[in-house]
Amino acid sequence: MRFNQWLLGLTVAATLAACWRYGIVMAASVALGGGMAWINARWMRAGLDAVTAPEGREKAGRMTTLFVGRLLLIFLVLSVIILTSFLSVLGVIAGLSLGVVAALIDEARQIKWKVR
Image (cartoon, rainbow, N blue to C red; front, top):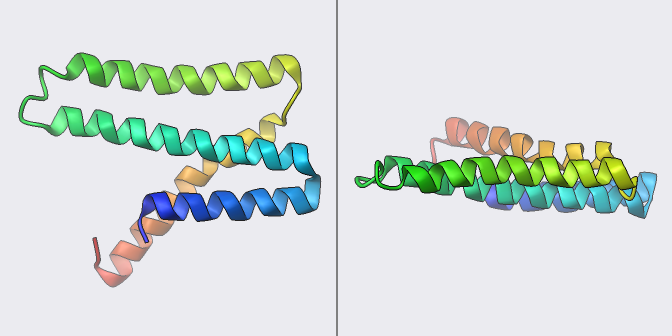
């Protein structure tokens, strides 16, 4: 399994657990955070690919846009949630944290079994 698969699996499991334990609002918050983590990871990968490409210097502006864009997206979503109290901020942060957990699991798997 790769990072995206781990992230998807963790997001589904955490969403179901949050729904069972805390209700639908928390489950929607965790799912939103997991989705934002996935978007963040894809944009980060695109930025790294742009920098490490042979023509990386020409794509520096795109990389900067992606970097700032993903931070603005996270800021805007959290701001709307805080201002409207529609979803749980803690649930969104928990969902965003799933990206870190997925990366740790994927790296631990690669170290233990020496697979890429």
